[in-house]
Image 1 (tube, one colour):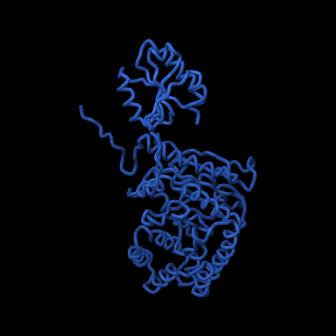
Image 2: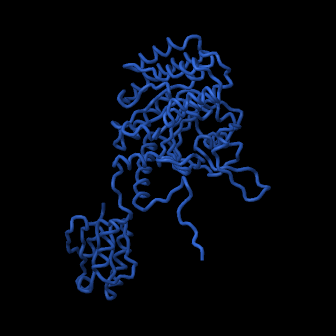
Image 3: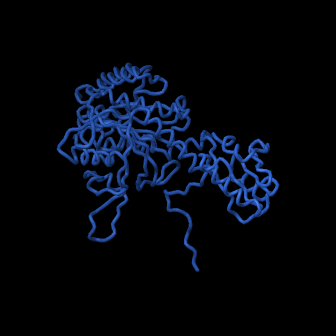
Length: 441
């Protein structure tokens, strides 16, 4: 018979147990940080109606996976992020929620992107958003949350949170005198700068969008602005962006945000104003931010987000602002793996392997496994076909179990077990009644 290819499709991947355990451990830590900041967990369907997801944006539609059972079904698509479903969720449940509403959501999303290192077509996002407040204090709170996530992961000195405001770039049409209808395309082009390089962006701005060389040069000059402090950089931007009230509004918001982020204790070494940040999705209206690993900037953003003031109004006649962030778990995990910073994690969650190599002792072995589990000790019982102690010990070592419980005929008769520390290669004799206490974490 012809064999079916066992490899997953391009852009998708399998995770071996150790990698899955390490990723899950990281997600659990992030969820704990979200809860510490007062965010509640929610869930939404993986499939949403196409009009919910796209909001009429053609660029979004190009990357969306669609789903149908029959030709008569309404058009559905796999969610490409967790923010648009959140806006629909808030509109559907507004009467049941208390605002401001702080929620977190960890789940898979799907995008038909070109697969490359750290970029997959199915990936996990860890989102936290605050819906309701128009105050820019909420923006500062999200930036502080981003910093706490990376600090608690031991990465505070290895990341930089770049912060900008969409209003600064929204004002380019006034500053450079081009039709404002081109602004979304200009922002999408600028958003590709980090991964495609300036030459490719400049070519798109001229050949596809129709800007002239002088306008493109002015955009690059703005994006390349630098200074010793956030305040000085904003002074330069203010002086450069003459005759653009929209840009000046964004600059003033960034000035206020700077003081608030300082007040929340986020060190200047971990964040900076970066006017080149555009965020290609059209629903952003104010503050935007992206986090990169300083040792691997080519990996792109591993955590991003921003403010969206009009998203909920797509679904209901209500004005509810929102601001949030999203950790790209799979890209972050791939980057940390390349840097050798993923902490080693056992493939099995079990703390102890109970070996079963002597039929006469089997009733006791089964009871010990059950007793350990009932005492809260994660326990695996050997179920393989190798009946030798040597073979089962080799299996336990390969499986990465910290401990093995050995009970043969002699141990069965005496009411004791041999407790073997597989990492340290030591062994103690322990009465059955004391095993759970010895193995408790």
